[in-house]
Length: 327
Ligand code: SF4
Image 1 (cartoon, protein in one colour):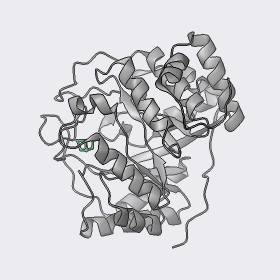
Image 2: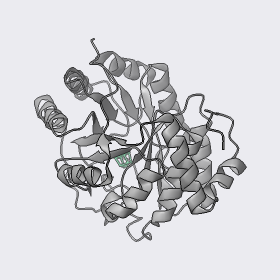
Image 3: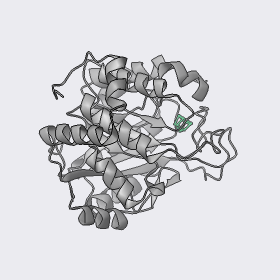
């Protein structure tokens, strides 16, 4: 298995990797992981919902969509000082990346966006990698964020282009790609991955990985999420994602995008430590944690639990990869 960075993968090649006998797949992925990354380091990221719920979109997995009857408490945009205080706390407990999420369809050029710009500046001054996920973005808005010190922008593909319309009807797959392109043009790093367990086929999973791995530049960060089944959403009764499917997705992403940070994201709460260890062995080298024990609006292990797990597994939190950006 070569571990060159390639952008010309075919779906057949990706499928062949995904279908390797599990032990062989994990062995190969672990080899690639060691060639590109320190295998004992895990990037610890904190995700904070800065504006929760009331979203006009209809993503069928999401408890924040206004149209579904979920228990999510709607919360307006947090004050800038509150967000900076959360970031400081996250830094103090070992996080090097702080991601701010707003349940918006798209960014509007209004006072709320001005506040987000101030949040980005403030978190950047703490020396953390600052990430945002705010919905669709124009190139001009991306440039403003970049100038404020934004390090990464998260915009997941969610699933394959073909299956996308079954999951979301209020926007198109191409809208996702446009925003990712705008982020790239502004010189911000890209965080983009997907969710498994939406009812997609294996073919859809391979197609999603193909889109990511054939981008002119691979996303620097690739989150692999297992569906968190939120009561009140159309997907609340979907079957639980099989751990071996997660391990295969992570290992395949690791092999085809060797230099990217592969993030074990939503769904960890339903995994044992041993299952998470398999994911790290397969090449995952990033997790989300948080003081509130939630990942946006779904349960997640807390930071103490996570630090204990890393210690048990002989892993350590990764240092921030950037110097504080000066505006
Ligand atoms: S995933 Fe994002 S865009 Fe979709 S409904 Fe939830 S908050 Fe809105």
